[in-house]
Length: 119
Figure 1 (cartoon, rainbow, N blue to C red):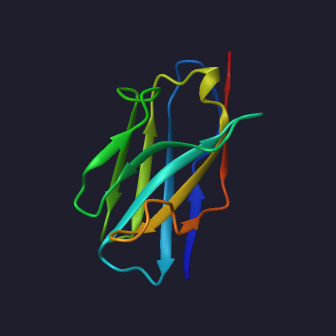
Figure 2 (figure 1 turned 90 degrees about the vertical axis):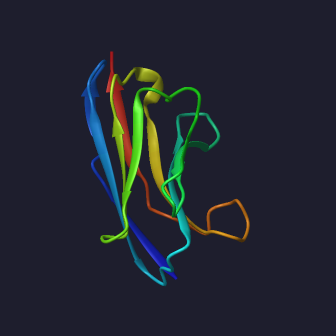
């Protein structure tokens, strides 16, 4: 089992910034990918960004250039720096964890943190 605890969500105005953090604990092996998904009102959960154990990152087109994902392997943590936020970014953001070399779907999820961007 892997436990994921997110923090850093909140309310921000259009154009503002937020930084999400996620700390992992439990059966963590070195080869894992972590990432962030989001689910807005009436929408399906979608990938926002992911980062592999080797530091290779991947972004959704809608956030590329505005969001930056990073990880600290010494802390088993992943971060999402979100800049130039717009109301379309309003969603519950979920941290994800996946063992590499298996499926491409996350093996574990965090509980979610709300991000609300006001216009």
